[in-house]
Image 1 (cartoon, helix red, strand yellow):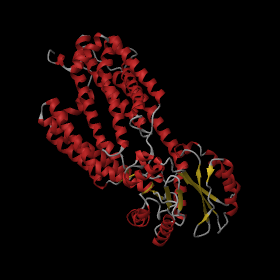
Image 2: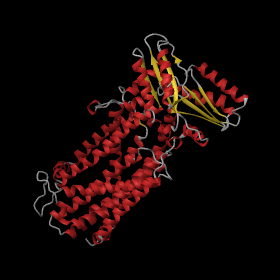
Image 3: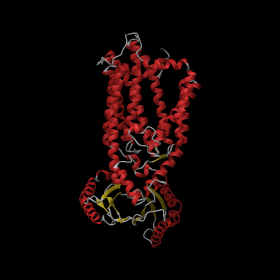
Image 4: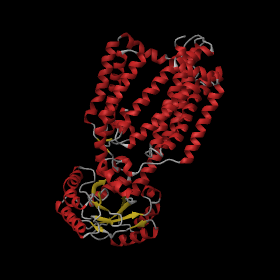
Length: 601
């Protein structure tokens, strides 16, 4: 053991066992202080321009610099069983919306080509980022209108509606995941150790690491704003890594004790073996996560910082606080034994690896056969990834085809193409009040109508004192399909630069489809350098740690195979729907655009 005592993990573990009170109390104080300070400072979330890229982000930046916000737009479609049969309901709804005090700029009803539908558009006053929390009075007005006019079908969709439903769905899903993760981890550890104290220790250490990271992340967010779900992702990653590292360390210490080692020797062996592996694993993960900084998207910079911080916390806790706790508890780590689960063998025998050993015996007996079979299986699982499509999934794909918000979106799009997801032309000009600019806008509207690729209602909002104008242009199609994409290309490549470009200092096209396409393009550009960085870092780190070229090469090959299999499985299930029904889902037809890069890292 003389050589291993010089290792960093052994030195950290030795210091912790000699100063266990300092290690334990210091850790708890640090976690409490950063959590309190971070909570008091609050956190800053990304703005729309920071969350995007390309021309769509530049458009949002113009609005933000001018102190303007794209208001939360809402629309309600009324459908009668005969042409113009919706007029009484439209008057009633308009009056109810006005009384809510939340709806502003309520537009007169737009009549569909068949005459059976009318679309009433309006905006919610106040901060659009919080519109989803203030939209309930509008929901109530729509419900009362539907109840008062039984022959009229009512469909509502908009920014506030989508935000409200999505926030509810994500909040509930993340809460379920967070509340389920801890009991699930505890249950697994109870089976592994058969003792309550041994099962609780890794979970408590992982949770404190996450709590401390919450505070650190709040402080960092004032320099690097975060996406709203970053903390939830961080918690789930941190819990998994924290439990994994602690379990690895604790299990080795328990095995050495079961083999007859004294407490001090068992801890030193665990530090020299499992502790070293934890340090190597933690550094590898953090370096891999840093690859996300090569992305041109602030979303991934936030993910990188969050995951690096939580892995660092979990790693440090595992090689310092955990040895101190084990030294303090001694054999009391087995307190609270569960009779049916406790499988500790008699002293002198190892307790780990029972199932693993049985699985490994045939593999070690015929390694070439199993290598070929396993490799072929992973390649087969990877095959569907060749047809992977990525996009920022729209509301219909996020909520499911049967959700009321999806039905409303499809019904409104069918009667009023481009209505729910218009393109947004944002421009900056010193000549907004000039006749030349007004002539250009009028010509722009004529060209839109003549092209046949856009809706009829084009809304122009000019802010002359700020030198900024915003033009909403409904796209033909459903807002995401090929028809809508061709319309967007016409806007960006032809009409906007030709007609509005000469009268603008800056002009960009934004909107839901434009933002999605810009985001997706940036991801496709980013994934190659991120992939090369991760592969190179992993190879060099494995080479330095193990001083073995075969191990370094094998680690790269296995990572490629595992990532390929993950991509293929994701594509098969979530894009094509293979086995989706068994999971209670339906195929989305594509993969969320940021997911492949995150999974790769």
